Amino acid sequence: MAKDIPLKIETHDFSFFYGAKQALHNITIGIPERRVTAFIGPSGCGKSTFLRSINRMNDLIDGTRTDGHMVVDGIDVYSKEVDVVTLRRRIGMVFQKSIPFPKSIYENITYGLTLNDSVSKSDLDSIVESCLRKAALWDEVKDRLNNSALGLSGGQQQRLCIARAVAINPDILLMDEPCSALDPISTGKVEELITELKDTYTIVLVTHNMQQAARVSDNTGFFLMGSLIEFDRTRTIFTSPSKKETEDYITGRFG
Amino acid sequence: MMQTSTSSMPLPKRLIGFFAVTIALTAAVAVLGIILGMVGSFVSNGGSGVTWTFLSEFPRNNNTEGGIWPALAGTTLLVLLMTILGVPVGTATAIYLTEFAKQDSWFARSVRFAVNTLAGVPSIVFGLFGVGFFIQFMGNGIDGWLGTSSFGDGSLLWSAATLAVLTLPVVIVAVEEALRAVPRDLREASLALGATRWQTIVKVVVPNAVTGILTGSILAVGRGAGEVAAILFVGVTYSSESIPSAVTEKFMHLGYHLFVLSTQSPDVDLTLPLQYATTLVLLGLTFLLNLTAILIRSRLRKR
Image 1 (cartoon, one colour):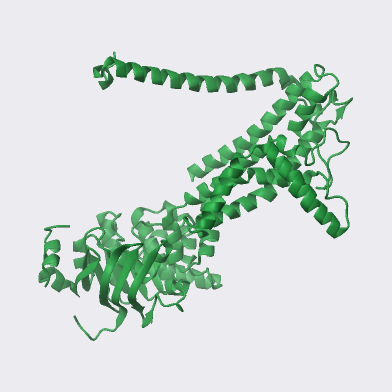
Image 2 (cartoon, chains in turn yellow, green):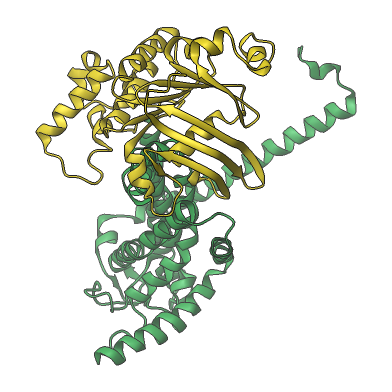
């Protein structure tokens, strides 16, 4: 891998436990800045758990515990002095199911912004527009910003969720199978979007769809049974993987 | 005839199935019959008695004539005050239990145990608790502290407080259910945007559960509205010259008024039309509360 790109997220021997069950085993990885990094692997391999460890969403589950280091911008996010709310404001997240709040389109975008800061209406207006433009949704919804977000189609809802995540102006975007519930056309739009957004954001993408990883990502990591088997340039992973497990998986021999 | 697979089943099995369905259906019909019969008898016997004068006049001549206005007003005031006292506490408890408490913690389990136990306590016991705790302990305490003499006796306030405690378990369970129905994904979406737990509760969880909270609360209030045993010793009175103008005054109540009419009157037969009409009003009040809950719920489904 190219060594000249600065690393945004680094882990050293990072392990994760649900109670007594270990879900991640000593993950060591460096995720480069402003690139799309994809994680692939069979269900239950730990790729989503790893993603959710980056912004500490797993904290919400009782009885979880971590070991090793998860470093974002040089700071160990699991150290005592890190405020998890501040951390999450720097890391946007897009989930598998598009889950707009049952509020208007406008309020969905401004939700994260108005939590702690008072932002003027004109600033909000311009942020809403720019975020919806970034999410390639502006032209479709500009005339009905005050309508309920639940009236949008599935693909539009997911792009709205991306716009909502972008609105808090994060450095990192975590995407947990963002297209798994979308039709091919919506998937295409979201993938296009991912490619555009990587100029601004460090994107980490978990996907079940290997073609998607091949299409949009710069680097790909392959997870299996809680371990990171291989991490390399996407082209390398899909053409000449160095590990037998990776090759078996991408050629469809299992998983 | 029947072309289903049941016809190929052995006879004993088919018989069991037939009897099971028959028994279940009979039970359902019986329940419907009881309700219809009850409502029908009260409507036919009391319907003509429910007039505007009946609703708006004070009882006269030792409760053998006149209307039920003070009882109607007293019940309404009681229900309102009970709601104001009980629903916020119940909602707060439910929010704690669903949103903050570790589900298997010692404290959460104790609270749940207390709630379940409270739900099974006979209502007369709540009444005695009201006398001991609210009137004697709190009321006398407040009187001693303020130098007044109005709190250490049964009143609208202590009756409402007693009923609030009585309906607490119903409110807590209903609100918990409403909160749990809010998808976990919505909470996560909010937290992932940098909201604190509290912000998530206020801005996402409660607004999404508000219809459930309202319906649950109204059903709980409906239960409290018809309750008589719990308020027997804590402020209800059989006769009153006026509508209470302060929460420390005693009050009349539809359910208790019915009890008085049917057992404490010098001539019970003479009050029979009044009894039917009062019952009908009480039923109507409960029905109205339930109807409100149903309407709110159906509006939720449409959204």
